[in-house]
Amino acid sequence: MPESNSITAAPAVAGNASAGIPPLARYLMIRLGITALLILGVTLVTFVLTNLVPADPVQAALGEQAAANPEIVAQFRADAGLDKSLPVQYFTYLGNLIQGDLGTSTQTRQPVAEELGRAFPATIELAVGAILISAIIGIGLGLWAALRQRTFVDQIIRVVSLIGLSVPTFWMALLVYYIFFFQLRLFPGSGRLDPTAIAPPHVTGMYTVDSLIAGQWSTFFDAVYHLVLPASVLALYTIGLLTRFARSAILEVLDSEYVKGARAKGLSSPTVMLRYVLRGALVPIITVLGIAFGSLLSGTVLVEKVYSWHGLGEYAFSSATKLDLPAIMGVGLVVGIVYIGLNFLVDIAYGFIDPRVRAA
Image 1 (spheres, rainbow, N blue to C red):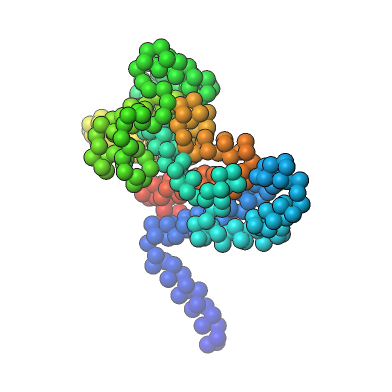
Image 2 (image 1 turned 90 degrees about the horizontal axis):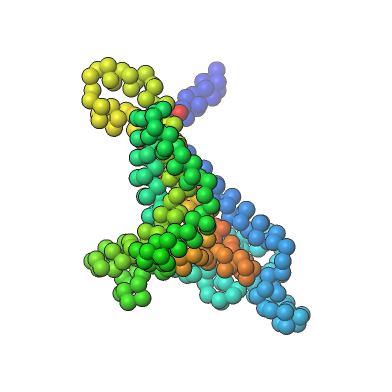
């Protein structure tokens, strides 16, 4: 009998211990654990897919003449660790990642981490600008269309959103470049700053942020001026997507019982919209924003090429054409971690917006 009492008491103690953790803290712990496992999975997938590329990285790095010399090839494989088995290479790769070492580019002979550190902020700046434009215009149009359901305004907004979803980004980038730069001369056509502008001291690598920190207002406005065209082109698809999702989510909330109850209490329309409708529609909207932001980071190649925006997309394109495996792995890892990080932030936002999520 005493043994059975002790056995049954142990689960009760464990249950009490877990019950003592606040729902939000438990929710955060679970999400952190899942995020850590996903990041580990990204490193494995990136490593395996890169090593399955049907091409010889040795020849791409050394050239045909040097690759024909067996001694040079053997020395290169030994220096790069390519003479070891794939499991050993993977664990070596993981050990280097923990120390912040992403390897050395086979083309430039520079650390991949340093090159990504120069390219990534430019793409972040472009993607943040695009997502801000998308959120302001997309949610605004979606709200307007929902409040004017089945009217002429609603039909026009739905057609505009369909155009945004249908037009290829690369074609729109060239069209906008031709009209607003080449013909009208309203905006600059390339680069992140004018050649005569003084770049701000490096803090984040984003010219808009660094110029604000340094108090260089002329540089800030010049950076924003250069950001308008590429960010607007990049935002077009997301605006169309977000408009449709926001309209659908807001219409669903407008028909809910708690919104009808709030109106029956005599609350003003702005109060009902802000406290009930928009908050209830935020979960699907935030989901779309998170996915869209990750897509912007990984889909900026053509826009960056058209507008000479030296960021992650252009770096990825250059690395892929030259079969620079360490650089390709670095880009894949960064994009994967960004996607996971965004999903983690979206999950955390769910917990704050909807108590039912964190209590599940």
